[in-house]
Image (cartoon, rainbow, N blue to C red; front, side):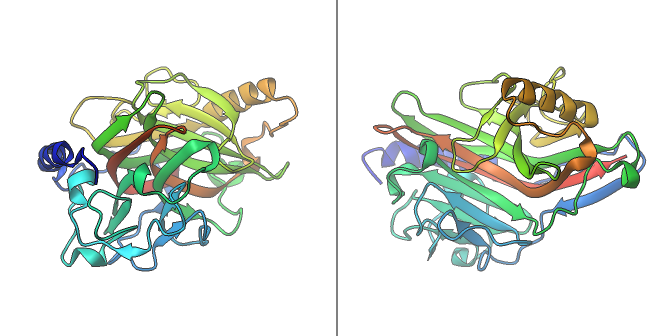
Amino acid sequence: MTKRTLNLRKAAAVLAIVLAAAWTAPLPSASATTLDFHYQSPALTGIAGHTATDSTGIPANQTVCYAYGLGSGALSSAIAWSVEDFTGLVVPSPAGDWQRGIDNSWYGSNACQATGTSMGFQVHKDSSTDTSPPGDIYGMQLAYRWDSLNVRPWSSSLYGADAMLRLQTHYKLGASDRLGSGIVQYGQLFVSLADTSTNKSIWYVVSLWDSRGLQAETFLQDTGGTTNYNIVTHLTDNARYATKHPSSQYSNGTGTNDWYGAYITKENLLNAIADLNAAYPSAGFSTDPDDYALNFIGCGTEMYSPSGTTGWIGSSISDVIALTEY
């Protein structure tokens, strides 16, 4: 890397020891009687065939490590160097079977890991070949796209009046570095909700961690290259757009629990839609939860880094799940 390498290596080594433990938290129990699983991270036996970039697009019905804002070659090379130093995720040997990145000779450059139900992400702006990504946003995530609109998490006919969408994952922050004023880094678990009555979509985002600290719930139009609107919430005891699972870590929490679970009840959804429609009258999203379908789920880490700034961030996730609880 650059002159920061010595300090980077020291910091990364310490964090790797702290973060290297395997995922051990049990699956929290349901608060209702029945679960219908819509998505569960599959147990991958290698990373080959499970990468995508914003240049290639995301294949349907397949779990991939998706890199965006980092250039078409961000995940093009097998990586043998220790991405674990940045993400905290240990992979089997040989490492090149489980890791893809931009440059096998550049320690600390963009790289992704995929092993079992876990993924690790090293997002490194300096090694990006995209000089002006939409919104100055760089990131990596586990991504899965449905090829139909058949998954209706709040369907009254399937699940009754009290259906809740439940989103959950393990998320761990690894090593990071931010240079320059205005850089923001954050971890997110999110879905795309397609309003089948209007053919418009919403990114419904649960913030897990933010370098600025806990941010207020908000809604806005996407600046990252899609036509979606964004609804951004978090895990606290009094959020309006999501309900924290009793066993979940809090957003920006400092405890040892790395499991995050959020319910999006019908009330949460309608609160968000009402506020969004009031702010953007032309949006006109449906107020009937039955109209909404899941067409995408993602979980990972993103960095906003405007021109003239640079930085990097490592993180890891495991066991991303979306289900209806009723």
